[in-house]
Image 1 (spheres, rainbow, N blue to C red):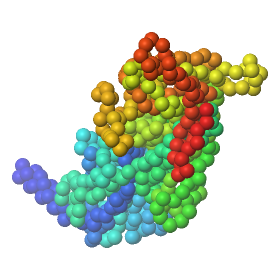
Image 2: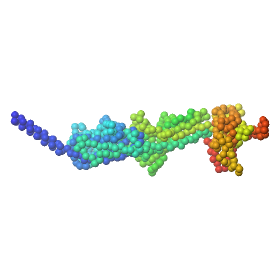
Image 3: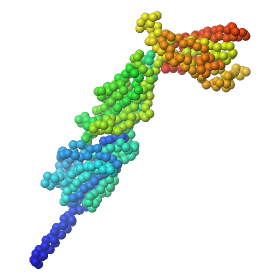
Image 4: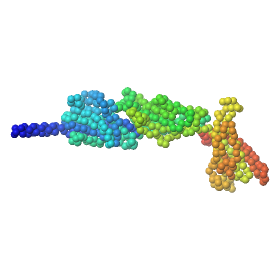
Length: 530
């Protein structure tokens, strides 16, 4: 019995010595931590985080442990999964590249089969996995027991793509580093900045107003990169940007809202880039994708030199050719842009980018061709017994006179009268701020006297019959929402007492050129015809 007890005691003592020896061999690995702070695109769902590197400061022997990097407040879009491709870039390095782009790079000063680079029984000494948690996405490094780590050996993590779509410009993504067990590793820094959010792009719109009777002019939709390197072409072989799982390039979607009926936009097949900031000529273009329409155009960013594009802030002036047929509708369209594709896509890269600018900028206005008629003197019972009759003809129906197709395009539209009432003059004839009757204040009065006059028809009426014009005396401009309007005024009055109009005079209205076609600005004044 004593012999048996003694044997058990010896065995327990031996086990204690073995455990003690193992504990002595397993040491705290001291790491110098560095990181790359990548500029990333606002609203990005798959933005590339900067490299995190752990470098051993002393020769040590590991215990079994894990190192966790938590990307605070950002979910990882490409958690490492599947079987990695293993390559040996040099005699002292080994790289594990996962199918979705995450890479684990190991540098082992003793050779690429030693230290972190080694394996035991087909199991690598360092393995990588990842999960998304409420705190953020996590990359987890599992390090085997009894790995002899030399001074200068490194572990580097690249290719992690995270969702920064809810972060504002200037906000950062922090990687928080922990060790389990806590005594297995020491880090000189446990919080590292791996990304800072920057502006995605800006949009500048140059709008155009096109009267339907004139030749079309083309609006400009200018896309400006938010910062140098914001736009990327990943997919061309030889691109200087490692893909890290990217399956697509930066794309720009242009949306035109409320394009008038029958108006078409022909988008340019490619748009050459211009350098906004930086030294060098932009090597980039935007290339139109098939399937684009008048209302939606999608462009893909291409560059012959991504390295140079990364040093330049580039812009692209997209100028569609506008076609306005005689049958087009009227109205104003707006335009907005966004980075593409959106969250419904599985493409890397992708965005949750709102339409910008918001509110949308005016892009294209198709207006009626308007006739403005000036009646220099109109009176409407300002002097009792005097009034002015006005007649306006829509002469855009003229085929019977000129032959089919040889005359004007028939048009129809409203007539609105705008009047400026005379002030009561001072003794020297100067203007004053007094008006009689006092219903007038010096501001223009207006009245729609017809909501629609068809081609070939005429409207006629007396001025004091128009709402707001009773007692009026001054000049009137009639706005006719059709071309080829012509007018006539006829003033009648009772200068002497009685029932007979004993004053009568008529004149033709003067035609003011449509300011939408010919600006009413000239140092030489103007000479109007009828």
